[in-house]
Image (cartoon, rainbow, N blue to C red; front, side, top):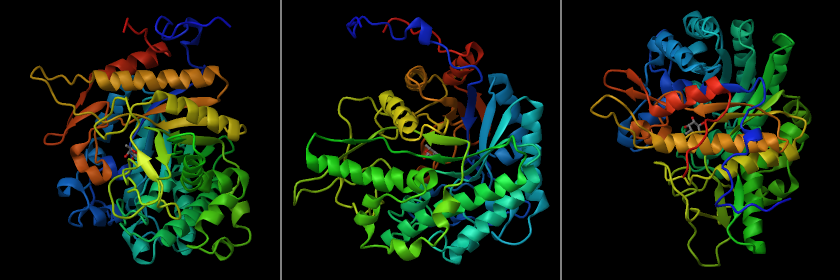
Length: 486
Ligand code: FCB
């Protein structure tokens, strides 16, 4: 192979500039982040309604009461997606909108919203991709103990059956959970997400029950959906890197990989919990009683696609004894760790990288490595990038435009990483930009704008940012546009 000086190498080899035929171009949102209409048509509070009303939990006291008002504006939003040429829309269903208390019969008005949304999408030629759970547990189920309680998996299986019955004839791709790591460890460990509990053992119990609920839902979906339907789960696989080549830092990386990634991929894709995870956490939970006979078989039922979300890598070390450990792991500050059993691990900001408004390092190679690692470790399951994107401090210019060149550069770099992974053998079926539009960014409220479409919250006016036009061009070409000289 001829060595090419990196400074004169072309940014992309011409033969690598196309994505596979059938590669899906989409954008994603989540119910609580965009819908609003929090108390309409029978919807009752989820844990995020309660959490956002708890003083000090969400920046500026923001809530999802109105959000981007997608509940009322979905027709316009679908029309906008069509104009941008999107081929797929990944949205989530608000459990407490369709089954208000998390148990018992469904509410038709709630189901109707999703039926109408899906019909509108199909009419526009946009493939709906439905996620059953994007963090918004009905409050009554949390009051009964939430995810640390095994009975919540029964509730989730019932809910999955309701949704398969209501939308199974028109939604072809189903995702059980979005980022169960966040639900378990930010929700019950560090407490920066709803329900805001800080109980390491409960976080681990929640993780197992989320796994079990996933497996049980997959079984329900398989039983009710047409054979051609695809089932999946979306994980935020942490791309973990040790700070140095020391054995101590390698151990930190192993630990975070175990409780960040393999705690889900192990049972879901291999039918077992990793032994090192069990060893690292056995002082917190008794895995032999937490995991019942038959659970692992239930969790590891086959899925058709593995969704992966990626934003930034995770750089870790084992600090010297006595040295303070950094808590900033990119998931929000807390006095409590979201890493049960590995609380001593330190997190670092990678040097020399540009950052987004979340202070997350911009590192497209992390996405390349994630896709390559996942396809090496689980070659049997195709991948889909179900979220990738960036927040920047966008504003509307006096001419009414939103110029977001940083986002264009971010997307270009990451799509190039996807393309490189595909060229190197990863089976990546599609890409969903996070997010279609600005929305309620959890504990950051409306202060962080991830949308490719700007939302003026006062008027609910949508303004496609420059990146939306750029993305529309990518979709049209089915390829990245050439980059100018840098
Ligand atoms: C992911 C979430 C999504 C959004 C992005 C920025 O972890 O799934 O809802 O908040 O981060």
